[in-house]
Amino acid sequence: MSAVKQNKALDFMKDYALYFVLLLLLVVIISKDASFLSLTNFSNVLTQSSVRIIIALGVAGLIVTQGTDLSVGRQVGLAAVISATLLQAVDNVNKVFPDLGVVPIPMVILLVCAIGALIGLVNGVIVTVMNVTPFIATLGTMLIIYGVNSLYYDYVGSAPIAGFDGAYSAFTQGFFDIGGFRLSYITIYAIVAIALMWVIWNKTRFGKNLFAIGGNPEAARVSGVNVTLNLIGIYTLSGVFYAFGGLLEAGRIGSATNNLGFMYEMDAIAACVIGGVSFSGGVGTVFGVVVGVVIFTLINYGLSYIGVNPYWQYIIKGSIIVLAVAIDSLKHAKKK
Image (cartoon, rainbow, N blue to C red; front, side, top):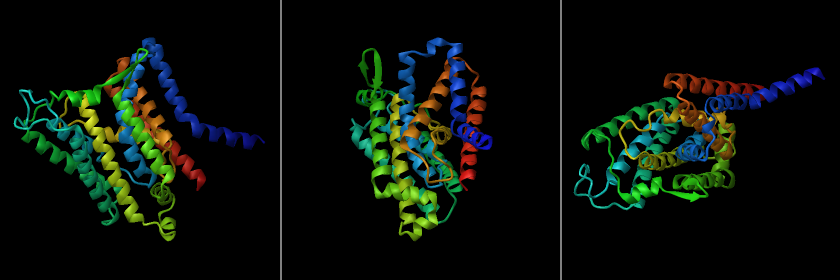
């Protein structure tokens, strides 16, 4: 009986150890500054989480299939810079395209999402048709995208792109005031993205195929699943999510440079693992991704709020990532 209890205790620790660590961090943050628990801070955390949720939902689908994407941040940055250059105010004296009139926001959304889809398509083809591992494939495209974005950024003036059209600012910075609580428009967009991805993962053949591929690619192939087409499809869809996230992030911040999006992939991947999306493939939920992002953003925001040295923040975040992957590996090892 004692052995059974011991195994149950170990299982409990594997399932919840990371959450205890994160809860402890949160307690430390609150003990340092109790004002962290305010509606304003919660609203800020929710708004910051919203863009990251959209981005993380994109990469989560790849992790489910035992893949990954290191080009996430650079794709976000490219979409941000393109959106920023097209959506500047007409009367902006520093407008990079002076002769360009008002560009409708839906048109820019379609453009950057099409570019994101194209990049995702290329990533998918490299991984599936050229049989390059996702890590190496997306490492290469990460560098390529950053180079292309930097060339474009230099071409339009090599200075922070700001002074956006009022409609774009309202679209990305607007909010509803609900009894003193600011619910941002970006959070609404994130909720729509969450609902869309939940339907894809849980109610479509495409979503079921993704989990089958992640669980056992060969078994999925034998069962009649077109592994190549489905993987290309999820990489393409992920590119759309990154691009839309980039458009929102540029507007939320109020400016864009070629370095926007740097290391976003690390936060997104870490949030997915914290939320229970397994690198072993075939395991994960949309709800878990959302919880992972909110927790990770809460820790990020909290550490900055109490003035923790940025270098220590890197150490803490890196430790959380290693712990999350280690726990995931232990769970997977037991199943084997």
